Image (cartoon, rainbow, N blue to C red; front, side):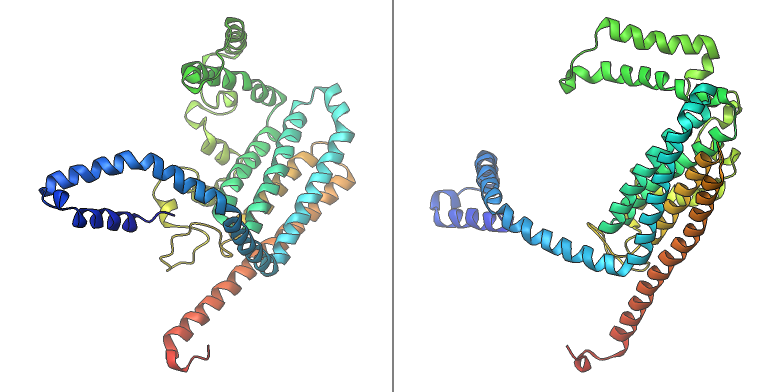
Length: 365
């Protein structure tokens, strides 16, 4: 990279070696330097960029090697809980696929919209669980926690849909047209600036009519946030927290609130990271081999909850057995994640004790 201090030294040298410039007052020199910087930045930036591109492969290969070595060490350390979590995800995915193949015709014949919502939730949950697993293997605990946040929302939704009527499931599915309408409003407002194609009058009319028909059928509250819950929840509770408390999963709210920090722009996420141990002033700008326990545990729990809701709509001996197996696995996964995390903390405590107790001159390096 082109060093800022080096650039200033070059300018200072030019000033010192040029009597005409040196004779100028400070304000005049400052103005001259500003013009030089302004006029040279585009060309200098282009030159530096070309150099970076030419040398990028060497830099990237070095970085990738360090990354590969780090991930290998992390895998060795966390192999037991990570492998079991992957096993849980595979079991859930295969059970969901089997359930879909065996039950979809029956659910269509019965117009069982609860099953149809749950199968969609489950498919999405499996995908998100794989994303969490990839983030954990890469050492990104905070990112894994944000994806678990969505998984928890899906678990709450699965319980709520399963505990209510077919009509609620239908209102949930149809609410997509309300969402499409408000997405369309935003699209129309910003499409030109973004360089997107404008919607045709026919497209606007189709989306608007679909939303208006639903509002006419269900009432004006339907088009409001969480309007699809209007048959179950009072107006003041039509939000995620209200749904969460209704199905008695409110005890997970502290974990959910923690995960929200890494999604939104509040200051806590900049000062607290799952990948940094308590007491450290490290600002984490990449991966860490610490902090995987919370998102790993939470993911195993939420995926199992979603799977159980799906597999018990049309219960069979096999589906009930899979649900039970997953519950057993969750306990073991949670225990192993905590065990590894505590091992890292204990090792760190020993290292701190050594550094504080043993004089540096007596340490064999």
